Image (tube, rainbow, N blue to C red; front, side):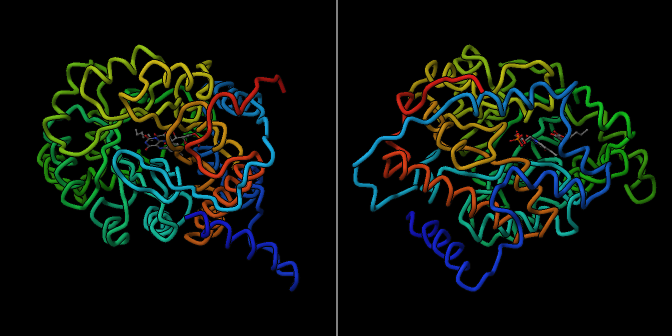
Amino acid sequence: MAKHWADFQYEIYLNGMTGTVPRLPTDLTRLEELTEQRLGPGPVGYVAGSAGDGSTARANRAALQGRRIVPRMLRDVQERDLSAEVLGRALPAPLALAPIGVLSIMHPEAETAAARAAAAQEVPFVLSSASSTPIERVAEAMGDAERWFQLYWAKDREVTRSFLNRAKASGFSVLVVTLDTPLLAWRPRDLDQAYLPFLHGVGTANYFSDPAFQAGLTKPVHEDPNAAVLHFVGMFADPGKTWPDLAFLRENWDGPIVLKGIVHPDDARLAVDAGMDGVVVSNHGGRQVAGSIAAADALPRVAEAVGDRLTVLFDSGVRTGDDVFKALALGARAVLLGRPYVYGLALDGQAGVEHVIRCLLAEFDLTLALSGHATPGSLGPADLVEQSV
Ligand SMILES: Cc1cc2nc3c(=O)[nH]c(=O)nc-3n(C[C@H](O)[C@H](O)[C@H](O)COP(=O)(O)O)c2cc1C
Ligand SMILES: CCCCCCC(=O)C(=O)O
């Protein structure tokens, strides 16, 4: 299975014989700066920005960088296999693309391009409720490739039920329920520019195309778009929800359900009690709680609390192959990649997203091999030490 990524390593090195350089950098941490130069301040601020003074996003990176790999030698890493079983699915690598809303502000082909890239690289695509492309069109673009649906759990039950039915009918197999965004956080880069695409009906495609949503409007969306936007704002999320409400989702979704935004071990235990299948240890890339615990610091505590009872996924701060290695060693089964793929999309559409996935996994494969591992399954806490950066 690792052959795919090893082929890419050869290809990219052998390009040196003809002096062909890649269209985008292979150090994915450089993509944010390039995107800043390419796109307007509104969209870039929205994607790169975080809550408060940005300290949570910085802490996410510091927590990963502060853990250092301790490589082992002479362990036969000639044949490697990156595949992982995640939530009953056999994945070629322990990676999925995180749900990211409103991708049309980054590229005109938006979610369709990102979803095609994920399908081409055999990585699950997690479609956001707040996408700029409706569920059905994204599904059409993906053939029978693995796709998961991220739910923003609306106040209106019928809208939620309708989203779940549409996602099921369109072949989305895993439900990712984001719990850390019952309200939008204090995000100074957006506030200072008065930039929020949803207020202009961008990123609302699933809502505006939904029969249950439309039933709550007095006029069709095209006749009174501002009323539709205000209806969306009023029902997008529900800060009044509590743990017993999860029963409604369990009743209305047959496949695995994963709770995204879990950083406390007790919340992970509550997820077990509620009959959930997994959690994503995530602080939303530092976009919600300013001053929050770094996601990588939360990960080992959550993993230890749930053991084998839940599948633990991870996001927030993953930028490099060694970050993937570290997240798995800290207890994650797989990672979700966020901002880097969005920058790839902004810079080169579908090809840019594919470049990002290939670089990340090629680098992960090399990190694994050079550290003495042939499979992700053999990683554990003993492969890391903590060291301040
Ligand atoms: C521009 C942007 C939009 C996002 N939209 C969503 C969303 O619609 N649903 C969701 O669950 N998470 C959303 N997230 C959070 C990501 O799923 C993920 O948790 C985060 O990007 C991880 O942090 P990182 O990108 O710094 O690695 C968004 C993140 C960004 C940067
Ligand atoms: C009012 C709609 C907010 C959508 C939030 C999308 C997201 O998760 C993020 O920006 O982060």
